[in-house]
Length: 144
Image 1 (cartoon, rainbow, N blue to C red):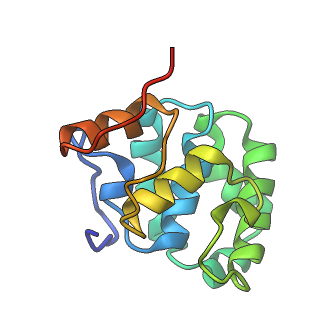
Image 2 (image 1 turned 90 degrees about the horizontal axis):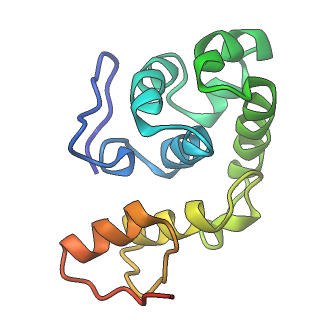
Image 3 (image 1 turned 90 degrees about the vertical axis):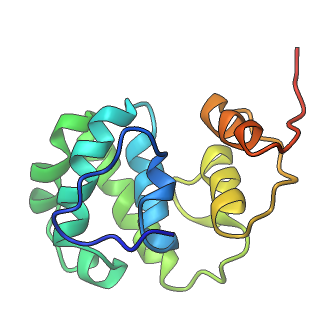
C-alpha cells in the first residue's frame, strides 16, 4: 500500500484502493465511491484525508466540516452519516468481516479482502475489481 500523505494527487491509472494507507482510509474510499464516479472521488479523497487521516481525528470533526469537503460527491448528508458511523464501528472492529462496518457492503468487503487480506478467492461482482484481478492473472468466476 502506498503511504498517503497530504498533498497527494491520486493517479488516474490506479484504483483508489492502491493509493491509500490503511484499512480505515480504504473504507472511507469505499463509502465515497458508492454511487459516485471515481474521478470525483480522486479529487475529494485527498482533501478529506489531508484533514482527517485517522478515524479518531475524523470523529472530532463536525458534520458541517465534513459536508464542506464531500458535497460534490452528492448524497452528502447520507454519506457523512455513513462515514461517521463506519468510523465509530471501525474503532472496535476486529479486522475480519468488513460488512459489519456501517455502510460497507459486498463491494467494500470484496475490495478489503483483495487489497488488505490478499484473498483472491472472493468472487466480486464489481467490474473494476474483476478487471483488477484479471489483469493480475487471477481467474474470476463469470456470471451470465
